[in-house]
Image (tube, rainbow, N blue to C red; front, side, top):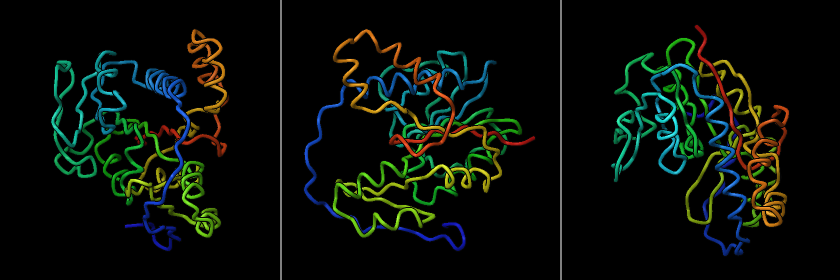
Length: 253
């Protein structure tokens, strides 16, 4: 259920014509390179047991396994093709973790915006906290209010757009009929602390704009590593920029 007393903004899903956006292939190359670098920095230094809820697009399980960790990868569909011996795929709903024992993982990764797809995100994060051991950590990525407002504006939901700053729960329809939950930094902080987790940090996935990245990489494709380093060394902050927010939290002992 939603938090008691929460003001919920939920817009009826429509399928309006949405203009074709420019190709951002270079930006998405940069985006996933940043995500991989952030995960590499965040992963435990010692071999650990990790639960991955992220789905195949994020490719977190192979990366964690290559770093020496044992990974239980929750997937909604069976995995095809070869897999690492350190990755144990389990076909299940990532929102229903009742089959996992309390305190059975050292870390949980919920990348790829997976938590925004579950509208009652509180229930999923509570389960994540339950399966973490004391001192265990979670890394998550969610849709931001910046993205949500852009989607609302693109679909001409102007009246609803003005309600976003006053709403504690923001559910945003996409043109394909799906709905995701978008978060501001304070909403994400409350989500974690209310589930018994201690926030370590929140930051935008990328602070560099897509247009800046596209321009730089069009002029100099070899600049990608420098752009990633610039993103990683940017000061931590939860400024309302970027389409996704990334957060790290720890379960107190």
